[in-house]
Structure formats: structure tokens, C-alpha cells
Amino acid sequence: MTALLLRDLKLSVRAGGGALIGVLFFMTVVAVIPFAVGPDLNLLSRIGPAIVWIGALLSALLGLDRLFQTEREDGSLDLLLMQEHPLVLTVLVKCLAHWLGNGLPLVIASPLLGLFMNMDEVAIGATMLTLLVGTPALTFIGAVGAAVAVALPRGGLLVSILVLPLAIPVLIFGVSASYAAVEDPAPFMPPFLILVAITMFFAVLGPLGAALALRNAGD
Amino acid sequence: MIKILMKVSRMRLVAENLSARRGEDLIFTDVSFDLGAGESLVLTGRNGSGKSTLLRVVAGLLRPETGRVTWTSDSADSGMRAAEACHYLGHRNAMKAELTVFENLAFWKDFLGDTQDGKGIPPGEAADAVGLGGIVHLPFGYLSAGQQRRMAFAKLLVAYRPVWILDEPTAALDVSAEGVFTELIKAHLAAGGILLAATHQPLGLENAKELRMTGFAGVGEGRW
Image: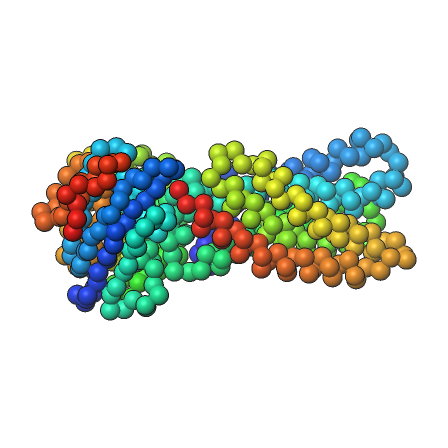
């Protein structure tokens, strides 16, 4: 299983891997916002956490459709399905590798983009923390969509649309926790803990659903 | 050339009354066979007659319409799926073009692991065995189609599985490579392995059973 994790990490940084593409897309989305909204610093800092979260959500969805499709195209998926290891575990490891390769770079890039949005230190820290906790949930949710659409030739957009409704709660609680950190009356912990709960919930349910879909995708 | 340590055991790969469906059509019905250690079964028949489908059913990748595939051996747990004892080499090579040949082979060796009946050999030796020992440092995508096929075959050697399921193993190969494959397959059978292959070219195996697939009409003369 460690071998699978390492292989997927290597693939995500080599040519054709999605690691840098996701970060570049994230920067593109967030960097154009100040140009569109105009130089109103107060407005920018007020919408900052939401914009950074939307950017991260879209970039996280961007590379998800390739999660199992590349494996299927070169025949590796057949071999992954045949093994003794439980398929759920294989899918979980692939999700972890995908998050380390695609999700973690987004978290690391988010403080820089927070500066674009004129956010203060507390807001940047809170956004980074909520992204760190919330983006794994996006990967686990996306894995189900990717598994369902694995046999479709151009399933990319379909995967994003399929998983978006499930990803909305992550966005809601991620953004509200980020706001709660800067705006006084709202407490930070409740939305943050719900975000943690969502991630843990999907860490179990996502690989289960994806494994089930892969088993039945047989062709 | 290759020594696979193993004791001769009571290994059996048994298929009973298999039939499979693609869409509305039954591709084949009532295929049964029983293969023991050292035995091989070669599937022949025209394109579309269901050879690949049968192999995928045996490998557990397609659900059969009726029947079942069972695997028994001394070391197998009772609940073991037949697929876990099999190597499957399909039309696609299951190797990543971005990684070097060595990384590919080392990954599969590590991920597949060995079954209890035998041991795989190191990636370098496996590449030597298919006659391409000097180029394991190249990315897999740089190799020619024939070289890629040879390296995919080397994958069968790095992790031990008693049953080899090969779908058109000699496509895109030159004559010398076919000879190498035949030798490797013979060595595997001599060590007590089982072979199930679909092919158009004769593999040069002396006492292989043959199952002729006839397509939609069912399977003729193929009851074992």
C-alpha cells in the first residue's frame, strides 16, 4: 500500500500530473477577482475567505476525474481490482495520495492568495486551517463521482456536477468557520467541528461508495 | 534461467458451466474446464468469439451470467477468490508511461506481493529474462510497442501467481520475443503453474488443451 501511495505521488509531480495545474488554476481564479471587483479594500477583505474557498473548491474538483480514469486507460485498474487487499483500502490510499498531491498544494498556496484579497493574519490563518481540514472531504466525495464516471470517455465535467451538491456543505461550513474567526459574535468552534465531522464521515463513506462503483463498472 | 521455488501441490483452477452476457447477447454458454498444476488451456477462435470475455470472467473482472470459477490449493484459504491466484495480462500493459520501467516493475512487485506457493524475482532480473535488461532506467513511454509488451510480461515474473491469464500475449512481438515468451511460459508450467491464454499465433506448447470458441452459437467441442 505504501508502494501505491508513493507511485501516485510520483505521478502527480511528473509530467501530466495535476499537482501544479490545480495550484495555477486556483491562483488564476483568485487573482482575477480584485480586478473585477475593483480597489475597494474593505470589500475585498470581507469577501476574501469566501473567494479563496470557492477557488480551492473549483481547483480540487478540476483533477478529480482522472483519479481512476488513468488507471483504467492503461489497464492497471484490472490488476488493482484482482488483489487480495480490500478494494476500499486501495481506494482510500489513492484518495490520500491524490490529496497530498493536489489538495495540500492548494492549502499551502492559500496564504499568498489571501494577501491578494487584503485579508488580515487571523483570516488567512483561519482560511488555511479550514482548507486543511475541508479539502480531504472534497477528495473523498470526488472519488465516488470519479468511480461512477470511470468508464465514460469525457467524464470530467460530469464528475464535477455529480459531486457538487455533496461538496456544498463543505463549502458552507468552511466559509462560515473562516468568517467566525474574524467576526466577533459568531463562535468559531461549532462550524469548524462540523467541518471536521463532514471530513471524517466522507473518509469512511467515500472509499466505500467508490469501491462499490468500481466493482460494478466491470466491462 | 528462472527458478521458481515451489512444492508440487494439489492446485486446481476449476470453471463450472460459465456463461457470460454482453448487452443482450450470450457470448458463450456452459464452458467448463478443470486445470491442474502444469496444465495449460489455449483459447482460439475468430475475433469477437468471446475469448477475452472468458478470460475476464475467470479473472473476476466480469460477473458470469451463470456458473463459477473456483481455486483450490494447499495454501489457499477457503474464502480465497480465484482472481487472487491469477496474473492477468490483458490488451493493455498496466504500466505507467511517466515512470521508468524499473519503478513500474518495483511498484507491481511491492503491491502485488507473492502468494504462499512461490516467490517473484527482482525487477532487474525480470527485465533480463525478457531480454531487455539494459533499459530499465528509461521511462516506460519511451519504449516501442514490442518492448512495452515484453516489459508487461516481465511484470508476471516479479510477483508469483500460480495462474497466468494471458490475452493475446504475443501481439506486436517479433519472432525472437515470441520464443522468449514460450520459454518463460514453459518454465512456469514446469514449475507447476497453470496457463490460460487466448491467442491467434500458436504458442509452441506441446501438450496444451485447446478450447475453440465459436461465438454466439455457444461453444463447440469444448467440454473438459
